[in-house]
Image 1: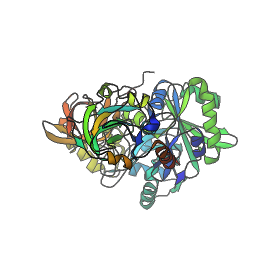
Image 2: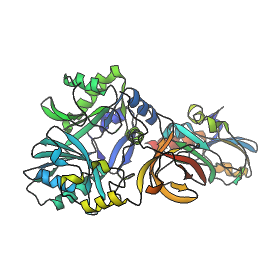
Image 3: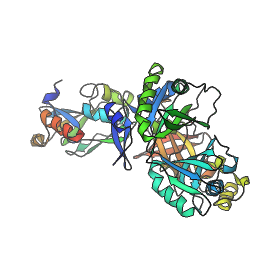
Length: 129
Length: 361
């Protein structure tokens, strides 16, 4: 894992891009804000999703209900169904065991719309100040 | 934005701060769940200085309060406290509050932070009696120490034996020349104390309680844990479970409505509701499927909508998905199978008593 090579969204998702396939999760900052994650709900069917739109995946913590937005347009290929029984993996290991879904991206140009690690760090700092 | 006298303490303890109405309040320090469980197993300290404090005094103070609230103020003796509601002429709830009888002709009213102005205006416009109403909310700080070890910490601070002190009673105590009221009350379902004091002494008292509480594993707790603790204990929250559209009969608070005490506001209407029934009743709900009920979710039975969730969470102590909500009274039977709509799905649930937690000591 090298989170410095990941790309980030303003809604605190990270994406690890490997050619056309990607893995998506939420950032350490996001899980800290949520506190204990109590439930992860996946949609019944994996569908095509648009960049920055809702994926249909919902993360609930004791505090509230949160949508997971997709960093990129594409087709979801796999959900991390382990999270259904162990939602706490998002808190314990947000960048590894707590990954949320895998997808095939359809437009590599969209990557330019995402933040680098350094840009995301600065973004979070601004949000917390 | 308003800050309590303890704001800087919260920041230095690393609290997450949220906006609660006009207030900047700590929502959690470590995590809501850890704080919640620590109150159930040890003790927790809450800053609730945002709550409002009114004083009503004078020869007709009792008569005034006894008319506008349904509990029996005449039976409240000095040194004692009761829970009650402030009611509109329509029998709906302006606020829920504690009344302390300080002296024969002097009462302390503790009201919700977000209702201070509304309550004060309502009481003031209703006051036609020989009594004086004062809003001292800005002068007072309030902290709550809750949990099984709370009594030991308060005994250490006050150097008093409190083993005989009953719930819903209070005493005066002095520190550095400041007078404070210490009552055996709370909003968590635990044994515990609430301390009302001049704002200037709050930091001293807060830090004293944290220091003395260290050997009992006391932790500072935010509004997050306060909310989940009160929900587990089945206590309503104004703005969620009760408001100025609900009556105490609908809110399952009939125990505070004392019809035999003489005349009081909306008595006939509430009596009719009590006799003939209401169109909804607040009840407890446990969701059995893997889903968390939340405020505003709809409740169904046999594919018909029968009510709405007013508070819900995954209970940190019991790990069950619990809620309160209003349903049709004729369907309010224990263990009845119902469904709660969670997004586009229907989660299986059942009706339970809303006391999800009861202390065992």
